[in-house]
Image (cartoon, rainbow, N blue to C red; front, side, top):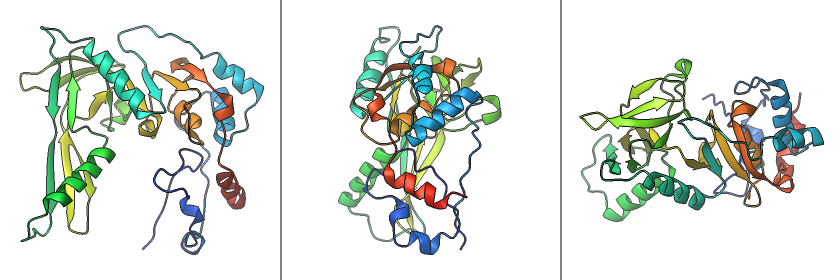
Length: 293
């Protein structure tokens, strides 16, 4: 079996384990070649790219500090507000709830759209799965699935795509929009930042539970777009974003991961940035130095 692993160790550090996979004694035995890809696709501005690379490795010059300092307190105008990025989940949940409930009225009720969750066994088992096991599976899936179990929306709510629908048309993971209404069938109608209007269709997310069982969720591929955590934003391309990079940053690479979500400097606003928190893990630097060609 041939295996290709991809990722950037300079981004978020491991969540459930203090060690990186390259620290395993099996890594050098099983991985025979390490190649560092250095072409940046998300950003085109050369000055922005150079500054991002400095933050990535934790070696920041005064010029880079000045560049991102110019983004502090930047305001945006228009129907679609910037996505707020926060280090902590509690801050995100509070901000999303507060902004959504500002829209609530008799003529604009808050709508709750429940997902369809299914346990699929192949081949079907003759034994009933214990309730305790089902609850554990469901809790783990709820924690790790990007699509919410209950999607809470209202007309004029800011939303964000959580799946690539049409990358060439600009409808990708992280694209921003606003709810303009709901179809007679209850579909959210979204106007995206690029002007496209879409009647949303449900999508499917899944997670393997064991060799014969998986859990599957059917839900609309959007979430409230007022705020999200830096961890959940990883992998997204966000058009318009405001972020808190102050004292609550708690992980190496977190600042880099946050800023690099944004395509352009024009779309970036910073609430606060603590340059003391901008650093790279020593182990990661040693790994890239070891494998540099």
